[in-house]
Length: 258
Image (cartoon, rainbow, N blue to C red; front, side, top):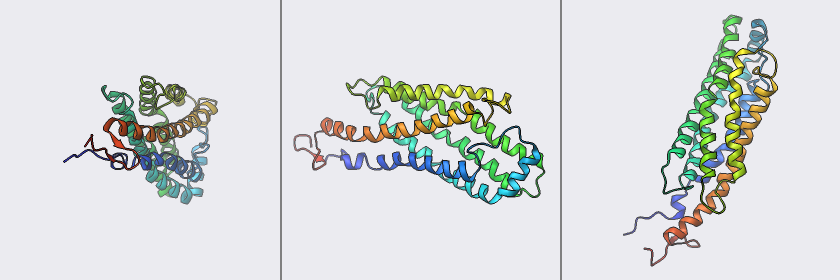
């Protein structure tokens, strides 16, 4: 009896997992960004009283936004797994260290996303009884975490790019330009190291470099890599069919391969 999985069984859920990337991104922008008042961030040079006024005025929106951001933030982990599955096939006869780095780095990226949201949710939970300095600290703490934990996201971005550039196919699964973009985008996050030293200007959390450039680059990375994964899946289905002698039309083993 042959226990080889058909393509339908083997690739089941790959596309569903890849689709959680755009779902995460859309929900993140709406919930974390708009409802949570993080696009753009509240300026770092705001006083404690101004921060307290923000939480005491907008507590319901922040509660809803942060609660949903913590929910949809976990979709980033599911999306990460779809990339890992494709990476295992880039050079499938070699070690999988880059795919493993990508899986762990992408999965752990959920930690700052969810934990920073929890800090802001805490500020919106009892804003009427917390003093202004505490509310200011909670908002600062959330931004310091999500920005300064940047390198855990840099790791998978660089791993994807390096793995894609080593693809021996005539037409790589991930285009060369996407690989170089992923590496460059991950390394560009090094500018986040300057954020704790500034409360105004381009390096502050609301600055055009620290926020607008870096977040747009990250959003673009999610869109580009999702596109690459969706393009890679049908190619891998065909490759696996040829490798195992599977009838692509009927998705079953051919008699000579059974």
